[in-house]
Length: 112
Image (cartoon, rainbow, N blue to C red):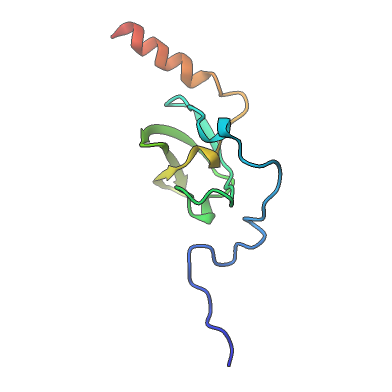
């Protein structure tokens, strides 16, 4: 008798979620990402907390807020905007835009 077809959130993700690179560090888990900065979604399969759906692996989005430890990231799937809740272990700040969001937030604090 054959096995039942998998229908869970990790179906067809054996190669996509294969662990590559270094282990997750405490600094990576506790990193603070400024609101408004661009981030890349790179799923780390060893951290199950607030893992985004596998279809968003490799997407680039904008941090719009924080919910608990996780960040809210705005991504567009085609023409449709999508709001994801992602743990910081799955996020990396996009190159060239890391300090841009920080400067915007500091300007708002001074003006207020």
